[in-house]
Length: 160
Image 1 (spheres, rainbow, N blue to C red):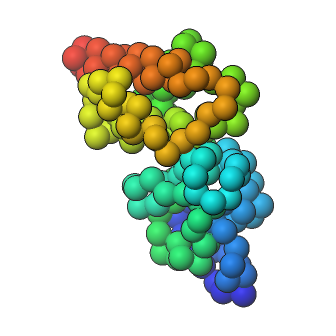
Image 2 (cartoon, rainbow, N blue to C red):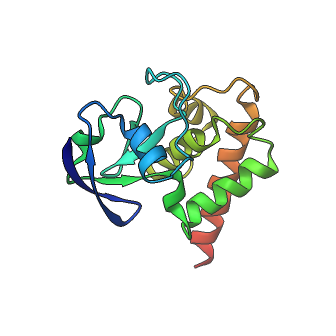
C-alpha cells in the first residue's frame, strides 16, 4: 500500500492504496464519486473522463498513486459552475443523452471544448468529442447541445 494525498473536487483526500488501483476505481470505490463511468477500461470510450490539474484525462488508464499531490476534478465537482449548468441544461433540452452512460464524459469533454473556444463550429465540436463514444444518440443532438450551451454562455457574458 502507498499513501497518497490529492485534492478531489476541492477537498483533500488522503488514502492508502494498492499500487495498481486505477484512478477510476479509486474515485468510485473510495470517494463514492460514481459519475466517473467505466466503459471500455482501455481509454477508448471516454466515459471515465476527468480533469487532472485542469487537463482532461482517462481515469481508467491512470493509477491513483500517479495522482499523489495533484488536483482531480470529476463531473460531481462542478456545482455552481455556469458553463456546466448551461451544458447540463442544453444536453437535456436537445436530447443529447439517452441512456446516460456516456453523458459525464461527454459533458466533461464539451466543457473543455468551450473553455478552449467559446464559439466553436460543428466541425470543431465533433473533433473535440472524437475520444468520447456514444451508442445511443448519433451525436447530432450532442453537437446541438454544445452549440446551445455556447450561445447561452456568450449571451450571459455579453449581458454582464
